[in-house]
Each structure stands twice: as structure tokens, then as C-alpha cells.
Image (cartoon, rainbow over all chains, first blue to last red; front, side, top):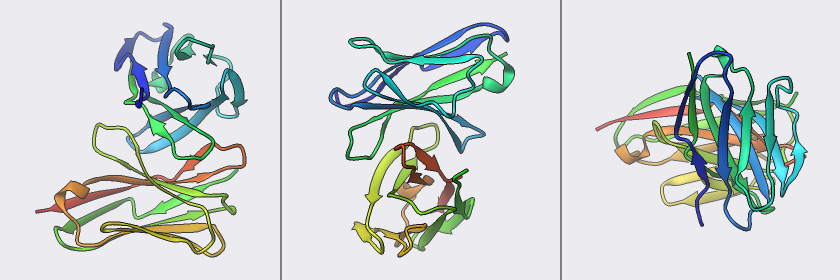
Length: 112
Length: 110
């Protein structure tokens, strides 16, 4: 399809619980990116993939965050033992090598 | 690390007035992209600039990339209420990830 599909739209977790977010990139796009948007505006890069391979993971808090992009499956971002500060909107985006990201609608994670 | 600064943070204009947002990078960029995010929405790609000194237009929007490829601007002529939203510049790093500016939120009074 021509859109990046993110699920769920909203997710509420108690502190310490696990959260798992999903992203189906546009077919034919070989790059997938995850960003965290906090305080309405600030975008924090988390991780990128080229096909199923991690391309850049310099933004990932490695102790609790993990991500995968497996063939024939949606990509996923998992947060173990969520903390209050993980509350944010998580955006997935995909692109081909020519640039210009297509963003999904985001998953709003609320940790209570 | 690489940083992209964007000003102003907010801009309120009367409908019909012009609007400009400015973006400055701490390092030379391979390209710069601009996105628009409506309230409650997701960023939507507007344009990519690659060449030094490049100027591109999309109807009432004019995008510029500086000669040193470290700064950029977006200018909207005669704003309309449909222009409301937050405009982000984003510089591409050498690994392809985008470093976003803080965004400029535009409010247009009818």
C-alpha cells in the first residue's frame, strides 16, 4: 500500500509493563525509521533498518528498547519495563534510497 | 553531535501576511527536507533540497538551501488558514537518519 500503517493508535501501560508497537512500511521502501516525539515537537531518532538489517541504532536506549524488521512481518518496537518518561508518540517512517520519509500516523504511548 | 536549530518557535500571523521559518545546522548537510505536521497529525513530507544555493517553489511556498549547505528557509506568501501547523526542517546525516529541528508552529488568524 501507499501508507505506513502503525498499530495500535493508542497504548496505555502501567509503569514496569511491556509495550509493543508495530509498523508496516510501504512496499518497496527498503528503509524503516523509528522516532519518538515528546513535548509535542521534539523528534528523537531511535533506530533505522535497511530491509531486515539494523542500519543505525545510535538513538536506542539499549537496556529496555529493542526493535526488529523481519521478512513478511510488520516491524516492531518493544519497550520492556516501561517508565513514565517513555510516554510519547512513536512514529515509524519508511523511505526508498531517494529520500523523503513517509510517516505513519503514530502510536501514542501513555505510561501511568 | 550534529544539531539542527530552527527559529522562531511560534509565529502568529494575520491571514494574508507572509511567514518565514529558518533552519541552521552545526555541520554541512547532504540534503535538507521540510515537513508539515498538523495538530494531532503526523509529519508530511513537503520537499527535499540537495544542491548548494537551491531554490524550489510549491505554489505559495518557497524553499531555499544555503550556499554552504548549513542553513535553509521556508517562506509562505499570503498565508491561509489551511497553512496552520508545525513546520519542521530536517537535515540528513551521513547514515541517512534525519536530524529534526524543533519546528515552527504557525497560527493564522482569519
